[in-house]
Length: 544
Image 1: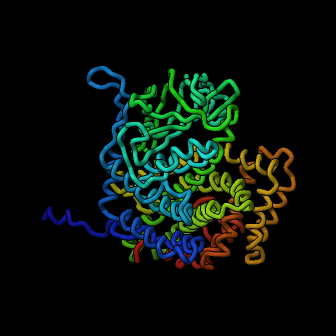
Image 2: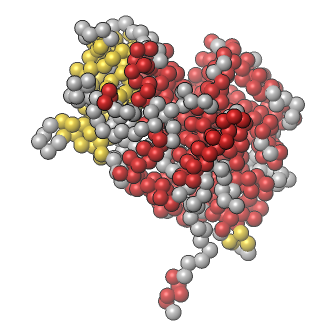
Image 3: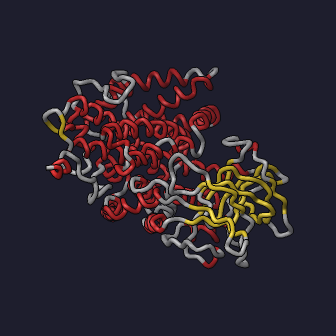
């Protein structure tokens, strides 16, 4: 008799064994828009293979193992020698190796390289977000190093390699390397000009000795790092290798690993430089200008990573509600739950569509597209990353109590969801960067207005939102206090313009009615009941 109480019914099966790329219609369609016909079959095949791997039970288990077994710091070996090494679970290395081999550090010289990488980053984030950090920084280091052609010639082939080599040895003996970054200091945070790390020139041309403390150094197991320090000529960018040419370890003292809310599989550290050898990148006093393209690339990755997390949260919620019955039928068919799921799906699709459009601008590389990126990247980074946490929390609630239990995976998404809003400059930094671009680079605003102008006349609510945005932009007196409001409106108008042009009418109509037309409440699930919400939810379903 008692055994019958252990019969399990009405539980959704695991969401596994599917193609994460192909079943994400918004992502697959964006790739189809932005990749030329001559390459499209190749790129789709590549992304579908990665999508099948990402949706497999095996890789999902690796993601769980990497998070349940976070990295450990080994400051000394058994003989008492300082070694400053970080140990990772084998699952972390398997995932990182798979990410490198999938081209997540190899965008800059591949045809349609940024779009194919961006789509892969969205897919890969859904397996395990932590290893996205070293992949992102390695990818983003390339434009910074290109300010010094000699350094770029030496390091770029290793950075863009599809070979993962985890051993610490001189870079010239490695087929592939990873880069980290150390900008943040205790007294400065995002105010990098408060940097106190000192750089003393050495006799060798371009060589310096660093002394200082970095409060947040990401991926400390990497082969080299880009850091900022105060040289005699001012704030300067430097390359710090972990292992010197003669095989000895550089002075890179890992003091502790951060115990973070989320992103637990990835190591973030406090490090000390004490007579640390470094090579100057770019000119003295031009550190911010040297590093700025790296920062822009990592900010785009923050938006892409948040888009991936939102997609996974929505996919899990829709999948669960499709298979879970309540009150006489499937949850997905209940009008109120359908409203919640559709609302979440809109947020996810808008984030993906905007992020892939930015990646396409990188591939284009023209003057107008570069101007567009100058304003659109910080706006997208601000808004898309801000939307990730509420989406993850609401999606977990769709699973009821299961969503609050670790083994269901939603708790990990919730913990991860605020991260991209904080890293690479928190919300206020992005808003202020938009203001800086508006004041100093009129071509950036012109490019953004051209972008939204392509959709004018297609939806009256979008037209009204564009008009309101122009009114806001016409009065920049005392604008700092309302900078967030302005950036939010810019991001929403960009998303609306893209959805009106490219998304199904049900999606575009619902987005414009709620986000631009004001027919929306303060929580998810408050869309107008007259909309075609069933079509929006069906589009977001990960498995038919």
